[in-house]
Picture 1 (tube, rainbow, N blue to C red):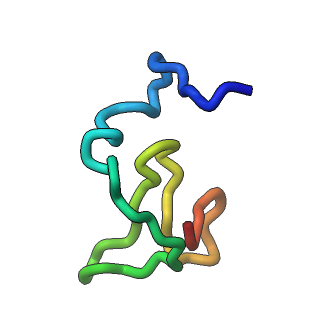
Picture 2 (cartoon, rainbow, N blue to C red):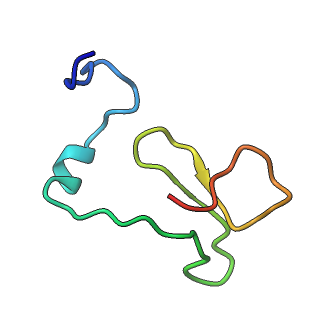
Picture 3 (cartoon, rainbow, N blue to C red):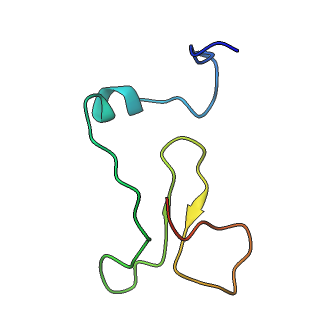
Length: 61
């Protein structure tokens, strides 16, 4: 298995530009401002929410 991603992968956009050198932390997702109910993974676009009743979402990552 190669560690080099396929450059044609739709999930790769400009993340390497703004995440290069960034330190990533594992956190439980929480609303950051009133009415903000979700965010998305910068690579696979999976939704992060603080809701138990919604399927196919991550609550931490």
